[in-house]
Image 1 (cartoon, helix red, strand yellow):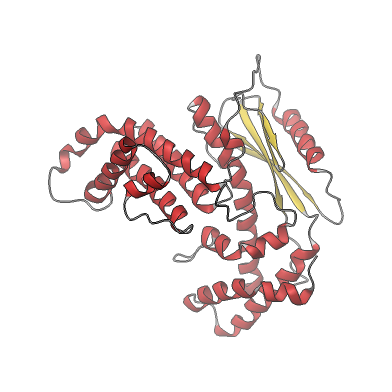
Image 2 (cartoon, helix red, strand yellow; image 1 turned 60 degrees about the horizontal axis):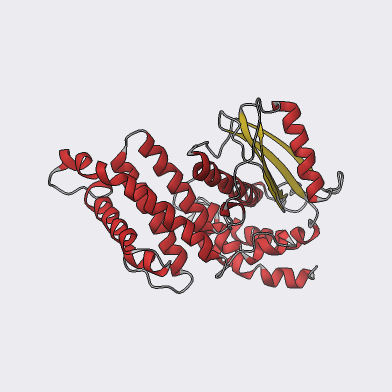
Amino acid sequence: MISDAQARRRAANAKQVVSAWFDSSDMELRLRPKLLSGIEAISIEVEKRSDWFEVNTVALGQQALPILFSSPRMRAFPCQGALAVTTIAPLWDVGLAAIIKDEEVKHVINWFLHYAKQYVHRSGVASVLMIAWEQHKALPTIFGSSTLFHRYGPMRPMPDFDVALQNAQSEAIAQWGNPTGAQSPSAWSKWTSRNTLDPFIHQAISHFLRAQDLKSHDFNLEAFVAFDCVVQSIASFLNVRGRSTKTRSDVCAELGLSVEIRSIADYAYFIRNNFGAHPKGWRWWDVAEMVNPDIEFMALAAEEILSAAGDFEAGSRKLDPNPSHWGQWLFDNFVVLWDAVWFREIEP
């Protein structure tokens, strides 16, 4: 555990990004020092919460997909009529009243910490959604139909992670029922170990699954745009790692993908710019007819690009997927998390 002085120094980058947001917000100027002091107070408080966690189980979809696996902080298993996913996330967003007195300041900090915790939870669910697509072509939503959760802290000590995951699984099956019929677990997937805490991988998954949903409903032009957003997210992923990606083809080349995939990625970018996002003044009625034959190729290309980026991440890691101390992780990655979860250009 670091000292209070070290915690305050580590909060410097966090205060800088929060200051920039504050200056563009409509909060009263008198709250600025209180907000920055609140960030410092949280940097100290999270050091004391190394054993505060929330164990959250969500029921996905309408069928008990035979996906069964466990990792250090999550577990997926079928229940009756749903695929259940349990995640363990740090409990940052409770018990702040004694630490931050001003209600408006507490509102901002509390919601940020809630969104950050939610992000950790969703990162685990995102990997399961990719397995569901990869192996079953299923598209359950990340939001789920039902949830169960338990909070652990000073009043209720956190058990061993494996014990907490097993307890959550037992509770979910008791609540939602055992799956009907014989269940043979799906084959192993690389998505069980890919780092979906990386914000660009996480964002690309969101675009990819939305694109597949659009495609399944014959919104192929909109699907082209969403598939191109996958490539844009991966371009940003590579850019922060010092790779030059001026074109969609560059993105594919950096990932070692084929000439065919590079070509379809460039084509999708053309469709996005000329018809999807910035419509031009020619042949607008015929766009769907033009893109329909190619949507399957783009869907496969986007999946290849996303998978390749997931593998690439392991050798250029920015965010630890299983930190030993989540409080330090929060402030080490505060700027990244703020960019990923906070409402900046619009009001929440």
